[in-house]
Amino acid sequence: MHGVLNKLSKLLATLPNLGPKSANRITIDLAIKQKRLAQIVELLTQVKDEIKQCIICNNLTETNVCYICSNDSRDKNLICIVENINSLYAIENTNQYNGIYYILHGEIQENEENILKLINDECEKECVIAINQTIEGQSIKYYLQAFLNQYKNVNITTLSVGIPVGGDLDYIDAGTIAAAIHSRKSI
Image (cartoon, helix red, strand yellow):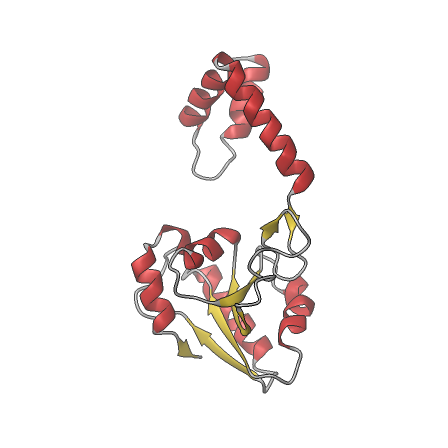
């Protein structure tokens, strides 16, 4: 491959879980199937123009506030802090959690002010730290724990049973995540 096809293939290969061979196959398929390519271009343009981050939790949304944060039946005193949107979806897919979320997107200190907005009233809050069990994740968890310990109205919990050390929530089955949510513990 050369020229624009090569550029597209290299760009596709930078996407998560997509290697060079798969990127080449997709590039060739898109170049051959122009109708599908046009549909994808149209949808990608819509995503670029219409999708933004929720002003409360950082989830992806077409409005200012996502469907989770705007749902009045969700428990606003139960806040699950996750690293990324895939972790939010992994927990949501269990149908075992009815609180709200806060998505870090890898930035901890830049999110402190927004996390404070979620916990900064006199109500008792539970913050579930649902961070991947990696070395980086453990550092994030300890940082959040120290940060949240300053606030007397916050009970800090973490997922427990079933989440393996070194595991990413996006790759763990719903049953294991559900068990971890039910057996969360104070930290």
